[in-house]
Amino acid sequence: MEDSRFELFMGLLGSASKSIQRLKAARMGDFDLSAAHTDCLWCLADAAPEGISQTHLAERLGMDRAQISRVLRDLAQHGYVAAESGYRRPYRLTEAGARVAAQIAQVVREVNRYVSENIPAADIRCFYRTFGVIAERLADAVSLYGVPRAAQGGDAQ
Image (tube, rainbow, N blue to C red; front, side, top):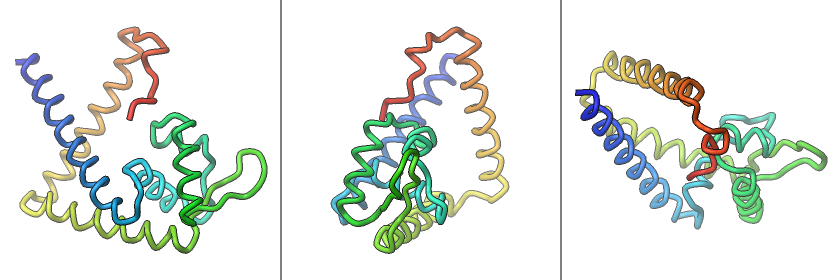
């Protein structure tokens, strides 16, 4: 039972993740941006108005700093983000970036409504509560089962 439960969990997680990445890529094509850009815009919109540093953005999104740097450079070239000068400078959305982030938020709301339309609210709350516990326990298992530090990464996307 546990082996098949693990396979089911991994299969469902992988399938959901691929679908989310495809949705992001398809919708961001309208802006000539990638799924990674979506994540950064979403995170920056959440951090507004104080902004967020490149390092903190990388940590929040689980991306490596080099990728975050490239994405922020692209977003700046599109006029969607701006940064103050100096060390650990916060990045903020520009007005154009805020408009794009609002459009992304609208798409997210539409997809969320579609995905959950026939699921009772209590079931959705239970799912996220349970999934949160699973995510925490998996993070604990990394330490408990001695996964080598280099393998813990977080750079895969």
